[in-house]
Amino acid sequence: MSRAKLKRFAEVAKRYNVLEPGKEMYEKIKGQWNSYQFKNENPITIELACGRGEYSVGLARMFPEQNFIGIDIKGDRIWKGSSMAIEEQLENVAFLRTKIQLLEKFFATGEVSEIWITFPDPRPKDRDEKRRLTNNRFLDIYKNVIKKDGWVRLKTDNTELFEYSLEVIKGRKDIRNLEYTFDVYNSALEPDCHGIKTRYEKKHAALGADIKYLKFQFT
Image (cartoon, rainbow, N blue to C red; front, side, top):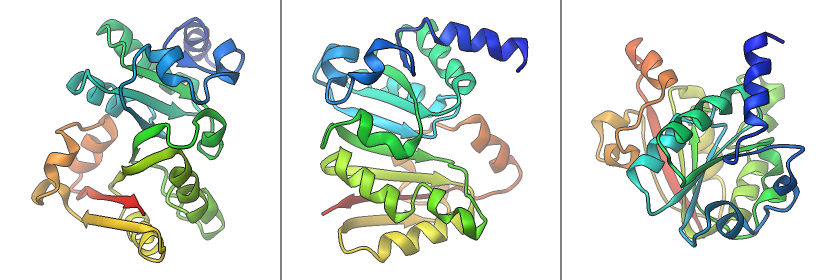
């Protein structure tokens, strides 16, 4: 591991806005995010596989009356979003270092108001289907932690993943209000994205990729 990564891991270990293994609150936070982390009763949005946390931080800037949590397993990625939040004194955004399949270990039933899945790894190989974040096993997890009427949103440049996600979602009987587009910036759904673009998105958009977007609620 490089010195830069080691330094970042050391810094993250001391930060109040990052929960990771070894920290006391890591094992106690389930059902307590509002009281323990944010000290308010504002609604919570989570960003899955948040990477550098650009979307979480961007949303926190725009909506100070809401709370945001970026979730990723890579601590060196979370370091960037954590740093931006501290520099900008954003107290309504935090980061959780864990695997997405463990969400129910950290969030109580109905504790989350909204879920963003932004540019996840498409996992194109058939053997990796279970690891796609729009696979049925993940959707079942999301249904448990999200509030009634909460929105689940997916944003991706990958057509194959998007088509797969639509097929899975349309095949379920517990989905309502599904809306989608294969080119969000030339659609009526563009305002949903709040003009926030990650470094990854800008890179692929510059190469000519259309950005796909969908949203839905569970029944």
